[in-house]
Length: 470
Length: 98
Image (cartoon, rainbow over all chains, first blue to last red; front, side):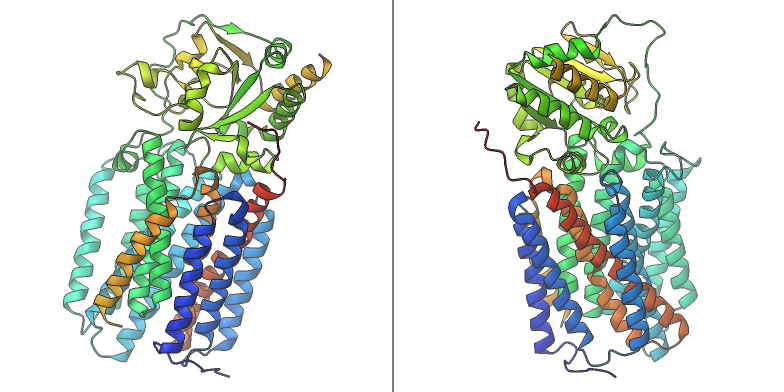
């Protein structure tokens, strides 16, 4: 029962695709403010419905049983996943979605190649080259994303896993993939399917090997990069299928992933190449504690509560440890108790506070923290000297004054939230152990810093109830 | 469509993309990522086309998986983004002044 109303590549279908991609761009544009973003998302979704409906009406679309099967399976999985996923698991989910997208693109490229070979005449280069590009990028993205997912989900160790001679193996694989692609492009009148499958497999290996050595703390960069990859692979598929909606949508996603990748790398003061190839993040090496303990002050929940309750302004600095302890709701209760007493409470969010860009903001929004109180690093730093108490919860390296003061520190130059500038600092942490960078945090030993050794959730809840008792 | 037209579209889209996306605040970067996940789900169109001219069972299987994968992206991506953005807007902004 082909509907076959629209001609592929005809004016009507192209016009509808243009409407669709305009709605994507407009939808993302509405995403620049929390109050309009939900509406923007809806607009983009309607644009997608138009794109899908247009395609279903094209001449040549058939095999309806299979189409419906794919739609039903995909919808069922998508609905269940989006309802069930917890906000702490968003990085895994996005990694998985990047992978699924990349996988779909590589599979479509494979089917296109088979179809081209079956037709028996040469595959024009303006189709073949984009197919090969989307194969390679899509396959890398699929496998790389699966590894990123497995690491975030703790299915495999988050520490860097490196094979000896890794760089050489990666370089050889890349050269092999490129050589095979060039050879297929030269012999485009007789493309070899086994060679194509070889490329698919080599790119898969490459995706695995590039992401395996990357540590957990570098995941925000990896996820953003894979996002960019999947977008570019989609744009490339658009070139192969002569579809404007795919080209524009893929490019939009590619731009987004690229911007986020660069922002995350800047926030860690490292180059993308260094993150991908140095196997650094999550390596607990370094001179952490030379056996001797440096002097520090430790306090209990009650003392911390008193300090906070009699302050005028408090800045809370959350880190990934807060998410791990599921402490966001307890922290919100603590903030509410303070606000009831007239204390101004803000949250200072470092760009890499979570496991993906903006992750911490979502976790706090889930706990009903108003977004106006979520302050960016550059915005809050100038206010910290005037802040009475800064409370660091589950954050470490991003508060380390060594990044500013010690040019020899491994994190020298990394932008930090300058909590040491605040009048007083309370650090809620289980122990003095170093963070992901594997270095001691000078903040813990400053005269105006008090350490509260406890689980983040428990400590926040205790402080909240102590404040209530005052 | 010829390649040069497509390249023109690609380059212009890249500039528009950079302009628009760089205006999205950090607070909304996670929903932005899940929304772009949904948008790249548009590759399922490729799956729809491929299934239509599948030459054998393998191509049909490949096509169905591609459609299912793309649909997961679209449905899951837009829904989870909606859920997250709901968290940002469900409470009216508190009027506590500056």
